Length: 311
Picture 1 (cartoon, rainbow, N blue to C red):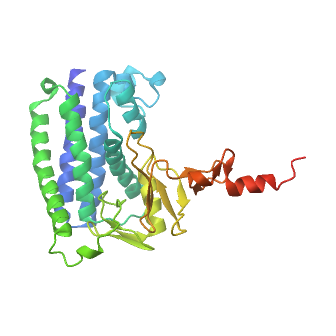
Picture 2: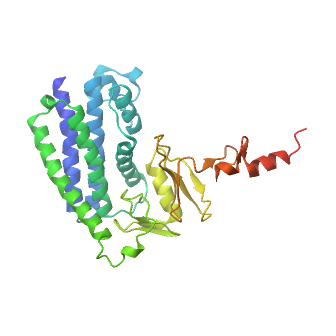
Picture 3: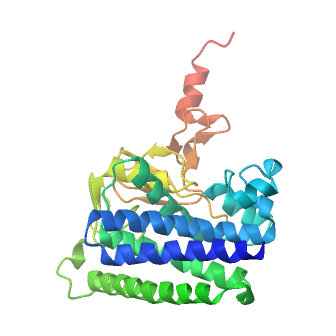
């Protein structure tokens, strides 16, 4: 049984190292495709290995169906990404911040889109996403894995991954510094930037047609909003914007902190609203100012209700 511990973790780290090599090479779209696929698979295996260390039954999609013989043979359906993160928190007591979950889930969503849909990506965006996701994963390994459980091969792979990740981090920092440097002739255009759904940096210029000055992502504001929602589990709906009247507002989710943070962002005009500044009408499911709400819903829905015959 102990051998499995090393095999699963080593397999995950080997996938990650292979994925980083493909992405760094990036000579063809095939390099980038297999880079994303290998990296996403490796991240998933490392997370599942931590579950396995707690209890091998947690790796099963349905723990009630866990069978040791099928487990040893690898003949079972394993837990999905979302449930894996949930079990790490609930069963292993490992806290993962919403921001870190978002980074891991965004890379997972990129893998899913690559497998099932047409997707346009850039090497810059993939390198940046890889650096962010792996930054979370390396911290996860150092904080939740016992060093004595790591084999010599595991440590060799971790060293290789860290060295490659340093190159990606350096690229990201240099690129951002170049974009926001006073010497950039287009610096005056960098106003009202929002988070790019492709590279996750605050470098997207919102408009009818949006573009990212970091990774080069371009799309309509509607497509960008849909792309964001597809990658973030907390964002399930897209709303009409009270400012530009495009259906391009996404809900970033409530942070629930003492100091309100941004909850709604429009990909069409860049408008942003702090928590509590907009409410979702329970009847029409649209955004309204709290001042425009009644105990029953927004004023429009209330007026329509009053105008109906309820006898």
